[in-house]
Length: 271
Image 1 (cartoon, one colour):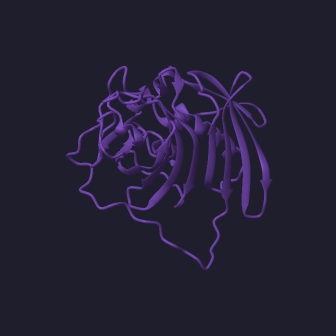
Image 2: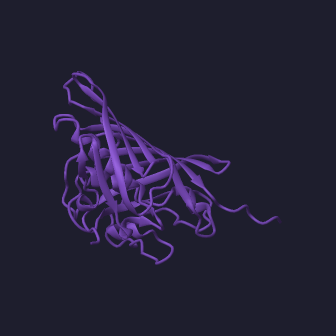
Image 3: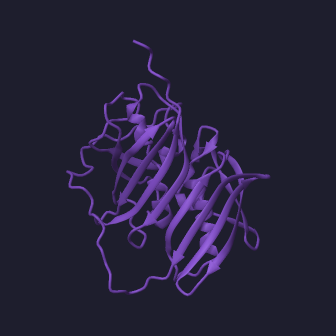
């Protein structure tokens, strides 16, 4: 059966302590491979099963070792250290003997201290109303993008041959609420900003992903819009260093990501 809401699509089924299985259906794919945001959430769900509810997610690093394919995956997680305030966990997403992704996650108890620095609010903009909705193009747009509604912002679109990179706008789930792990997936659901510089559809894949949680993640109604911005810090030799930001509907900065993206654009023809 095809999965619909993200919570259903990212569900884990226990095999034994510390070991689960999950299913990547074709509608959550990128061609033959799985949507990276879904793979990340498999690992984070497993880590969350091993820590208490009093320790929310604060940070994770994900190494995409090799693409996970559509089909069954196994998730293995363990606690590396559990202190009074923080828990460090490791999770692996496997297919057979092949490691697809390795995640290191930190969960921490919220503590009142004498320091508080507010994160930057969402950029001032007119809002998603009246903006162009990012269309689904069979054969060009990944299947998983049908699960989200996108409104494109003031950025060049992918493969437009723009003179500046970037991506951004507004996003929300097409079905269901935006729970904390859906928010993680929405951070990864946009095309890499470096693709705006290309003149034709170009493959690109995330190699390494670091995410920091800026405000406690809580569930929001699925109809609420989230603001997303992504930019390129630098790109050379087939790799691009990019940053991502996702603001909650109330304007608070929720997640900040940094990705190393491998891009496979062709060299321009000689003049």
